[in-house]
Length: 557
DNA sequence: GCCGTTTTCGGCCCGACTGTTTTCAGTCG
Image 1 (cartoon, rainbow, N blue to C red):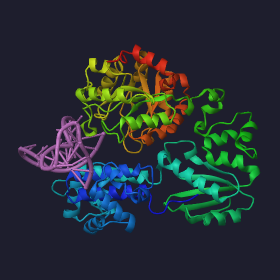
Image 2 (cartoon, rainbow, N blue to C red; image 1 turned 60 degrees about the horizontal axis):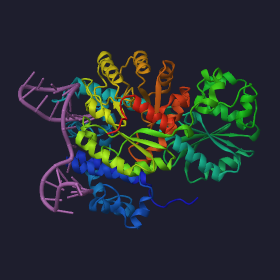
Image 3 (cartoon, rainbow, N blue to C red; image 1 turned 180 degrees about the horizontal axis):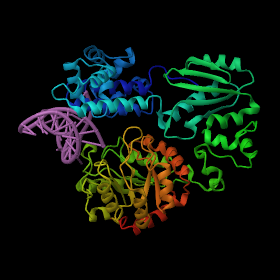
Image 4 (tube, helix red, strand yellow; image 1 turned 90 degrees about the vertical axis):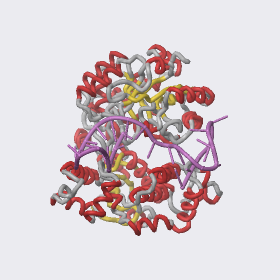
């Protein structure tokens, strides 16, 4: 396997991102700051290595990269940094960016802390908050103190656990590298294999008859920075990226049992105890009279009672299309044509284009006039897949929608979302949600709880009531497959199914790459024991169209 | 800093909530 020389696209994107943040601290125009963030996103999603793009002279063809940023990227590729970045890091301590990352702390607060109190690091900030120095400063009060302390607490609680969207690709690439370097079987284990929302560390099982030789080979791998620990049954390594991973060594005849144990969770493994010595996982389960239980279903409970249902649960191949994605018409990064092509490449039959409505100004949401114009483009592009003209319509704070009923009824598919006012009291929040569920023009409620994993708690909804009404109106509830959302989460999705609700799984893709997140949504749906018939985007295009038409929209223009 | 069936210069990123004040600045989705 040949490895591309030079820094990764992600490294370049992160540098542009940091530079943008530093520019913001220095008081630069918000538009200039934004330009760097936009360029960073484009670079992050490039199909080819940045160095190759530069060599072919196509840097300026990257969206958001003009003369200035192209020159910066050239310099970065040659020197590993660029002079503008060096200048700014000389002016501001890099650690100010850590403070800027605290929720509720923006540029103005960071610079005031730095200039008036000399605070440049998180520990200094914590000391100032604890000692009361913050609230003693003019312009700061008890609330900022509380914001800072709770933000620091969140950061501390966060440390160590990665979102599944990072952990799984990382675990897979480590397993692939080990497979390349070692003769025996290699398998990803641990919570990443089980698709838990967050992952503490990467676990891998490696088969070997010569542990010492295997350890030596692993230690010599380029991806491995250092062996941190060597224990009885394996070793702990620190990767070049700084992430640590446990590698368990096992003789071939015990590979299955070791993989079950290393995959966990403890409650699941306990039900199988004592684990029979077996060369593969299926044999472990067979010895207990069970079929092989897929890792994402290993939760230590239901899987031992409901296993006959496993073959009927939804799988990736059941998905015929998606009903919630974005394009450059709002905050997406790709054209409708590009999104349609990506969907076609995945074998999808249909794709709902649902850009934001105007209420979400920051996402440059569409007003009625632009919605009409977009509809024409959608009609022109439709071909590689069946495109549905839709909207992700904003549910405003007062519960009203951004578009009137006639506008919504003319759309093929309507996805309603609560992005604002998620901290409202339960009663108000439920009034909004129930009102939207009862609107016959709304087909889908997107990311119903509004949570962002480890960043924002869900809204305070009364789920039994919400699910009862959704079951009555037939409105589909989304499992949003974005690994930062996974919303509904699996236990809520299971409760929704018990209440008789219909579901849909969507990536909420803002870029062609976004569709690859589908596997996370599938895992959540399976953890909720969902079958294809529960999920509207597994249905045939004919059945889906009939359902949409029946619901009051989809009648066409 | 980028970009152009509004424009090669002048837009681009709006509106509400919160906290700290006392008429508004800062943050965020």
